[in-house]
Length: 65
Image (tube, rainbow, N blue to C red; front, side):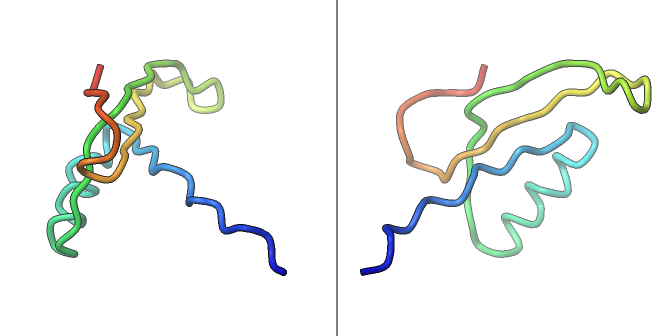
C-alpha cells in the first residue's frame, strides 16, 4: 500500500508579502489564521525580516503571538 499522505507544510509569509497573501486567500474563498511570528535577520540581504506562520482557519486553538 502507498504510504500515508502527509499534510502540506504551513505557509510561511514574509511581512512584505502578508497583505497580498491575505488578499489571495480571500480571492480564493480560503481562510487562514496566523499561529506564530518569527523576527530575524536575513544575512544575505542584510535586512531584518518578520515571518508569519499560517494554519487553516479553525485548526487548533493557538492564536498569533
